[in-house]
Length: 177
Ligand SMILES: Cc1cc2nc3c(=O)[nH]c(=O)nc-3n(C[C@H](O)[C@H](O)[C@H](O)COP(=O)(O)O)c2cc1C
Image (cartoon, rainbow, N blue to C red; front, top):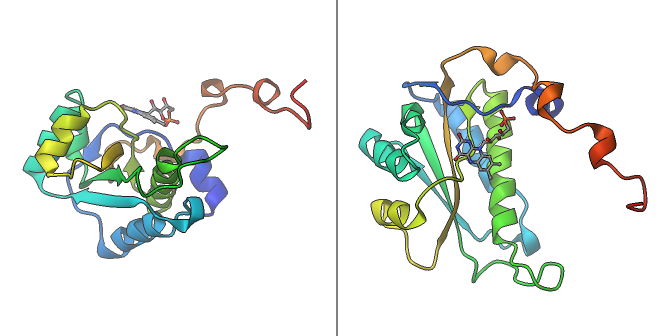
C-alpha cells in the first residue's frame, strides 16, 4: 500500500478485535513514531506502549470512559516535554503539540498500511492518565491512540467526500484573497 492509499482509507476505528499485532508490524509502528520529524530534531517525546489489558482499561476510563479503546492490542500514550521542545515557533509558539501530532499521524498511516486501525484520542483527563501511568509532572500527555485489528472491514473504503470540506473552501492559490 502506498502513502496515498493509506491517506485515503485511514479512518477512526472505534471497534477492535482483542488480539496482538504481529512483531513485524509492531516494529514498523515504532519506526513510524521514531522517524517522525520534529522542530530542530529535538524529539521532545516519550511514547508509552500500553499492552497490559487492565492498564488499557484504566486509561480508557480516564479518557471519558471511551472503553472501546481498551479492545485494541496497544494504546499509545504520547508524552511531550514542552521545556525541551522548540519554544519560539513563529516567534512565540512551543512546537511540542505539533511534534507529537506529526509522530502520531505517522503512526496512524503506518498502522493503516499494516491493515490495522487507530483513533486519535484527545478527550481525556490528563491528571488521571498521568497518575495511572506514573508519568512525570514535567511531561504533557498530548494525545493517545489505540492501535489494533479493526473489527469491521470498512477500513477499505475511502473517506467519504461528504465528510470533508470542499477544495475551494480550504485552498488559496498564492494570496489569501
Ligand atoms: C486531536 C484529535 C482528537 C480526537 N479525539 C477523539 C476522541 O477523544 N475520541 C474519538 O472517538 N475520536 C477522536 N478524534 C477523531 C475525530 O473525531 C475524527 O478524526 C474525525 O471525526 C474525522 O474522522 P476520520 O478520522 O474517520 O476521518 C480526534 C481527532 C483528533 C485529530
